[in-house]
Picture 1: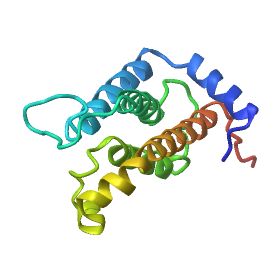
Picture 2: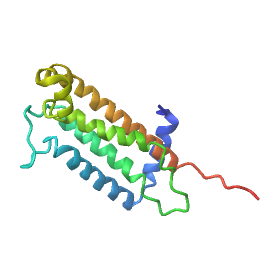
Picture 3: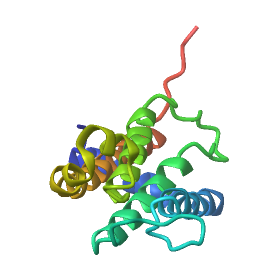
Picture 4: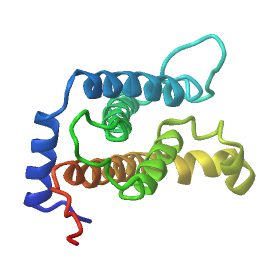
Length: 164
């Protein structure tokens, strides 16, 4: 992972240079992520979905961190008004997608996941899958943070132009 002090410095510089448009997209992206991940997993209570196992205390901060980091990653795809070219979309994009998908499995009901039920059964889901979910949440947050760092650090790199 590229979580060097230099990456953190570049990311901070990029965030300080964001305009209202980027912050608005980050906020909207965080809200949409919270709904898209939180509603089907019933961490965000709603009449459409339910869960067999109560929401755990750590599901709320895991969803909040996921939403915040996903909003930042999504906002890095907004082209800044400056003359700098947009960052390479491949840098950190897969990490962000995998991190977002893992967060869904991390905060979801362990016995509501059909794949886990088929593989482990209800008792296996509670005995083996449920204890792994907090680790998935940490892994998800780490992948999203790495994706954000990579994408933000590219926003501060000065492009090199080809000479004639």
